[in-house]
Amino acid sequence: MKITKTLMMPVGIAFLLASCGGGATSPAPAEATTPAAPAAPAETAAPATVEYPADFIKASDITLGDQIDQGMITEAKKIFDAKCHVCHGLTEEKVVGPGWKGVMKERTPEWIMNMMLHTQWMVENDPAAQQLVEETGTVMPDQELTKDQARAMLELIRSL
Image 1 (cartoon, rainbow, N blue to C red):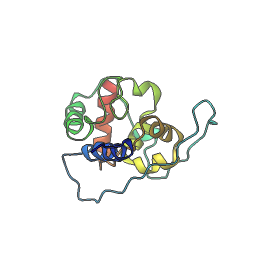
Image 2: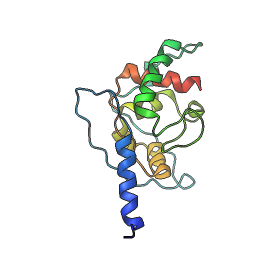
Image 3: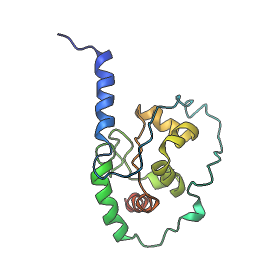
Image 4: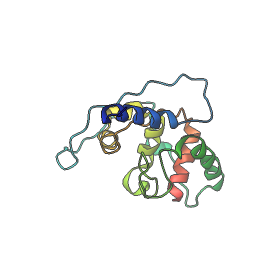
C-alpha cells in the first residue's frame, strides 16, 4: 500500500508537536495552540509596533548583568534537555524551530521571554512570531514556563 504525501504531512507534524515539551508537568492546563494566518513576506510587510498586554515582560523587567549567571544556565540546560532540544539547537542551525545561537542579535530580551511565556498570543499578534511560523511551518507548543524559568532560558541563549 502506498502512503501519500497528503497523509504523511499531518502525521509528521503531529509527531513533531507531540515530541516537543516532554518532561516536567505543571498544574495549569495547557492552552490549545493553533497556527496563525501566514504573515506577509518580510520584504513587503510594513513595520508594525505591537502593543503587548499589561502582564507581558517589558524591557524594564529584565536586568542583564555584565557576567553570565552560571546558576541560571545550569537550570536552563535542564529545561532545554527536557522541553526544547527536540525542536531547537544551541547553534545557529535550524532544527524544527530556529537555532538559538545569535538570537540575541535579532530579538530583544523581552521579545524572547514573551515568546516563551505567551507563545499563542505572540503567534496571533506579533509579526516577527508570525514570520517564524511561516518559515518553520509549525507553532511552538506552550511550554508552561514560569517567569524565572524563562529568564534562565534567556541567560542560556545569551551565553551562546
